[in-house]
Amino acid sequence: MAIIRFVMLLAIVVWVGGIIFFAFVLAPTVFHPGILPSRQLAGAIVSRSLGILHWMGLTCGLVFAATSILDSQITTGMADVFAARNLLVYAMIVLTLISMFAISTRMLALRNEMAVIDDVPHDDPRRVEFNRLHVWSTRLESAVLILGLAVVYLTSRRLS
Image 1 (cartoon, rainbow, N blue to C red):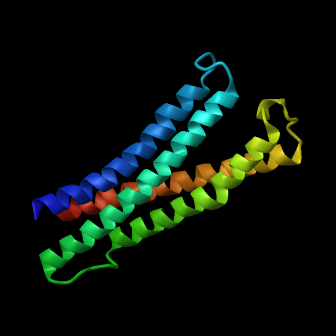
Image 2 (image 1 turned 180 degrees about the vertical axis):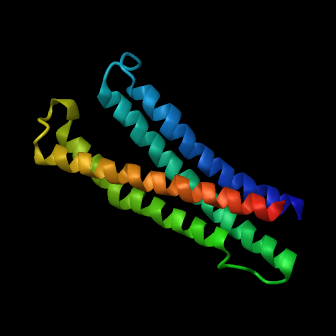
């Protein structure tokens, strides 16, 4: 069914495209000097946008998994829940959940504690922890992007 494959491909492309836009366009733009009046405002925009991206990604991941399983059921007569593309999407979902609930929520709490993060000394334990979590957030998003690119490759190869 062409419509199922279209929705499957659209779901992963929207997720991966969203990550690429966020990482290479939105974040660098709002943190570029002179674009916004403060880094605090840039951080608020990035934080809010990342939250939306996470929910969008989870939705796309679930849609991809459901349509991928349905497509394999129609194509082969067997629902291939453990196909490589599905396992990668499951990993993407897990990493996104970790980023949302273990990393981002803690970063937001620390940011709220510090009020204006740029006014807090670099050796303040809250800022050190915030920076450490930011590194992990970036690593998780990078991992989701790499896995997503692999899913796009596997899916396009399967559809050709």
